[in-house]
Image: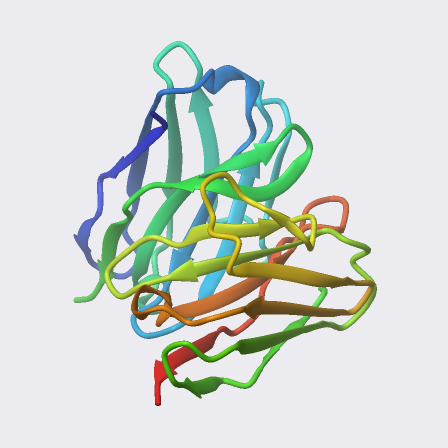
Length: 120
Length: 109
């Protein structure tokens, strides 16, 4: 069965960096686009970034463009999110999610999420 | 950016009743719309994609309709496990700038 397991969250000071990972299993990772979505405490869902199946194409929400970078290692079945210049407003649960179909950006599987807290 | 607006913010429904949730897009998204269910402390779960196609394993109690800018999620007979927050999400634009609605909380009346 499809499994997505995020890791790397924690407490980080403002201005610092953090890298999240998402380990994928149960499907052919190299054939699907992958996403990061976050949810601030008590708030709704915010899409952050997508990476194409081969890693060649990446797109970002304006809120994180230039600070966050999505990447993947298909040999390790792992998705990453490098987060730089973190702010208090980046405090959230971060989910990785899988494209539901080739070139259709809805999310048919989600990880359980990893909490990032930006605080001094 | 395409803005997705869900209404109502909270819906109070008795078990066994029908629930109708609305989602409006600020511009046409064709049928490129998905619905998700989220329970406290859990990840969202895909219910509907392409506006009206049920995801694998989703009960026939859930149905989606609409196209363009107006969409509806209907839960035909609410069960206890259906009380949750529901989000719509559009995936129409290119390059991708995916957006979610603010959510509708379905609570027990």
